[in-house]
Length: 215
Image (tube, rainbow, N blue to C red):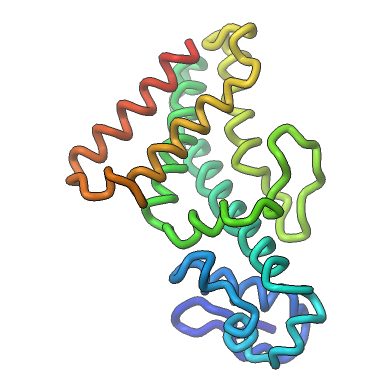
């Protein structure tokens, strides 16, 4: 059982899935402190177990960080999926276009609203498979990866005739690079001081450019 305090962190672990308790603790540490906060001793303290107990499930700090980073990816995917499901437009082309835009906006919103998780998600090369790999889902979740969510949105554009099939190949690289680049600039780069109205304009320009570039 994992008892949660007001912060949502894992505390008071008594029995059951110790690995899950430690990942949940690491997830809470990452949320407030980013990847540098995900350390074995802090996770064991947050979960309420001895430091040595951590090594039953994680060989080192990188193992724990990879598991937490993968869970952050799951949170990102869940937001992207939630946003696409909120698109209610009935016209098929407009619906596919709106879903792609929703995927991109969710990505940027996640970076801005959960910077600790966003930074952590990309902090470990072992947190998710290389794009294009048909790796099975991790034990953390069966939720598709952010890459697969994006890929499905692009496939929908082809299915409704909004994206020529000959332009579909590797289009996810351009789309992902655009939203990730803007997210990073808004979070840690020179655009982080922009006023909110200008940030919204920047987001819309990038999302519009992605859509037009694929057409």
